Length: 278
Image: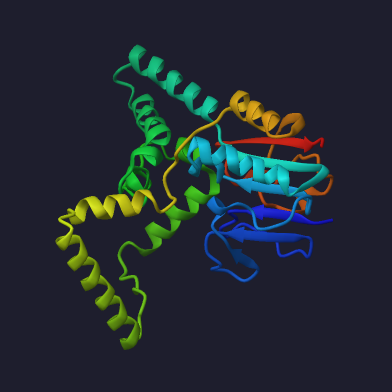
């Protein structure tokens, strides 16, 4: 059996059956590849293709091509497992706290939860700087709705918060570059500044554009209806909503990629699987 994990980041398996791809090969066992250029394997290579919180970072058009590529590299009868932020659940939470807030405008918990879910809905689409307003919310001195926050974003959010609290009074050591690396970096910066000035391009506009092209923002969102339709159009059948610990793949849970019972790694997720029929 041969399995493929796309856009894996730090969440991947080193078991022999897995191939792990990410934009950069920053970790042992991870192959660097830009998925906008397709998936670099022949047709029908894999029995199982998986990606978590990757599809939403593609534009709608690029996302459709990406899902087509996922089915292309699957064998007939192979499984595609897609994990994404669940737009339906986010929208329901937004409506819930909008209505509760209107009924009890002085309720501080309703207000805090409303503020968070609005950020969760929009921030990763509109942000122009690293982490955006979501990061500012998580790293504020005191979080008024901490339990709700962890209910939404899970253990990853709790870990970020814990690291911040443990290190906020210390001086975190910056990355150290050699003299040669530092000189090369300064030369590149000078060349870039010269070109931007020559072309009359505002540096702030350049920085925002560079950030927004860097892959952090969400470019499209999905729910069980739209994702099911997309998977069906691209070659999927027997499409079903799963959870973090269940899959058509019988031994899925042993890899702990979507969490380890009873903890789901990303509780805001929608888990959908399809079988390739042709």
